Length: 227
Image 1 (cartoon, rainbow, N blue to C red):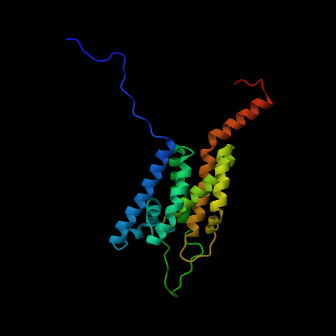
Image 2: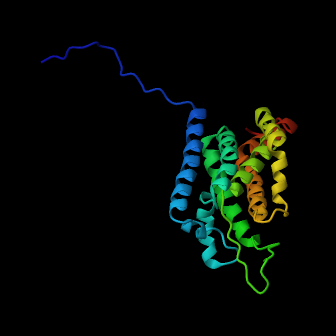
């Protein structure tokens, strides 16, 4: 039996979402996750907050994985929400793969740095009582994204990425003062570690552009080199 129909037609392909939309949805979903976790934490009398980074303690290393997801209260989370949305979205414009790798580098290296120096400058208000630091919050990750965005364009030498870095510096540059000690109860150690990790991530992930630039320089200086 023969088949009837319209020869030569092909099924329409589903429209692919723009990269910026995928990035926006990814960052928005991450922030929604933070709010869901804080809601659960509030309903459970903040039991999750004990899973932060406790410096120089072996069981405190586990906190590296969980600390950016936890917040001490709603005010803490609200303060981190807008910077996370804005800086996270700008990070995705460099490419989703770079966003994921940069976030992983800042998350792990920044957390490890916090674990190493998190007790520096700690002053216990109670005489004779040992105070233990417990670092939580997404601010270390945010500082990593901020530092990444500021320096990434200078590593890649791409005009639009330099422009993004300059704009971010003008808008959020004053926030970088948070890497300095001064405000009690604020983890400047986490901010500093996150920012340093962000610079490291920017350097590592700008490798293809830096290598291409060096190759162009070598060809320009000696045009007879084999390609």
